[in-house]
Amino acid sequence: AGAFTSRDRAHLRGITDLCAGRLRAFDAPAERSADAATVAAQALFDALPVSAMLLTPVRAASGEAEDFRVEAATAQVGDLLGRTGEEPAGRRLLEFRPALAGGPLWRGCLRVLATGEQYEGEPFAHEETVAGVTELFTYTTRVAPLGDALVVSWIRHGSSDRQEQRLADLQRLGNLGWANWNLVTREGSWSTQVFTLLGRDPADGPVRLTEVPELALPEDTPALTRAVGELVQQGRAFDVPFRIRTSGGIRHLRLVAESVADSYGTPVEVHGFVQDMTARRRAELALVESERAILSQHDVLQAERTLASRLQHALLPMANRPVHLAGLRVEVAYLPAQSGVHVGGDWFSAIELPDGDALLVVGDVAGHGVDAVATMAQLRFTAKGMVITGSSLTGALARLNTLLLHSRDSHATATMVLARYEPRRRRLVWAQAGHPPPL
Image 1: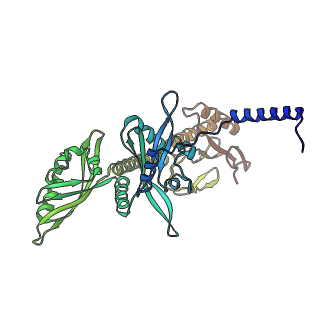
Image 2: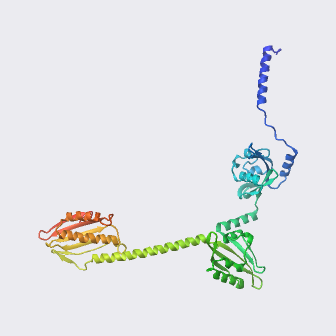
Image 3: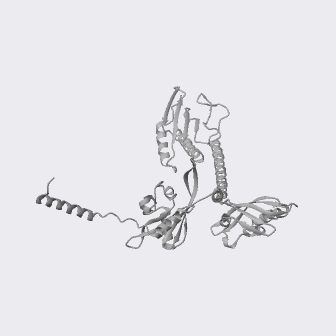
């Protein structure tokens, strides 16, 4: 190709300087030093039978931990953290699994780092494939301090652990706990939930079976004492409700117990459970109170209905035979829509006026009960009085409307139809106010 010219050499030197400058500006990150301690830690973790990792804090300028470096980890950790097949060792924890930020594991690590006390998280389910079969396992996460570092481990629970967890869940959800008493040694054993239900410090231990009635209110002590005595002496099982007084108030409990006898039939052991029935008992009491209120209201309504019915019959007697007036025969048929249920303001009137004419009135007051009957009586007698004293039918209705508007009950409404029959001219004159017209 021949020798470079001086100009070519100048260009090459410039390019070389530019490339060297770039390489100096973007230095590659330093490789993680594989010192002897790190290698030894990883070798140890490779031999662990459980899932675990070793963390060291990465602190900010303020001294607070802003992340953790995974110094060593077992092979299963990636799967448990949701990064199957990836190797977490040598990486920052939040870089490996950003979703951990602010979660229970992250908060647990910070707590252990600050207090030096071990942390144990809530059990969680994790799906794994074993021998080609997918199974669901329960794990608990634990974080323990190790000098300036943290050891995070995941404990997989076996079938017995799961049974214990289910029993604990059953007691918590059912608000009950188990209790056993040895009648020979007079010792007892309670689950944690029983201490909680009885408001007793576990440090004080369980009370003897014969001392249980002393925990109840004085009114409930005799029945519980009798039941315990019959169980101990005769082996008779019992299911007895009783109440105790706690710092939170009165608590309604239920003690169910039975005995186990020896070869001679003598009770030697008692086992049973204590259940909190407070919520159910309160609901029952509220229901009883509600039923009492309903019955009381029913009695009041029945009394009011009876009074209204008597008033209606007193103010509006039903004719048991035809009435003859102004040459007419008047018969009455009263068919309420809900006979025997509601007493309302329906009324009618048929009288002979001083001049020999007949006044026929049909009306209805909205509503039921004593108020409707009272308004009915007011309108019925007032209407008759107005027409007898010379008011026209339309004039009487107008005045009755004014009377109703200015009555004690300003919300009362009524309808009415008035008819006047003149026998000399055989003429019927009628007026209506909201009521259906006569046939």
